[in-house]
Length: 89
Image (cartoon, rainbow, N blue to C red; front, side, top):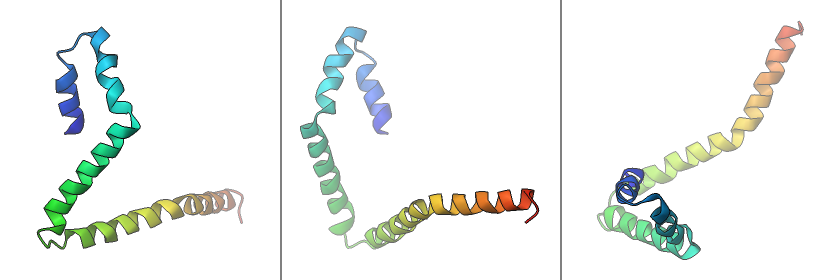
């Protein structure tokens, strides 16, 4: 959605105008404002309405994070098993 909106905004610009349009969006202040706006929207959508969705977000986010943290170790383990299988151990 955001990329589609961004594309529609720059579609009418000339090539020389694009850097001047994009440069302010790459600042730290713009990023802070965007994060604050997203947090405000999340609070209004889920917290104020007493929804159970934030609990699901924390649970699934923790599950995904733990999977990503364990992934390199699992890949090394599977490579070791494959190497042992190829060499008859």
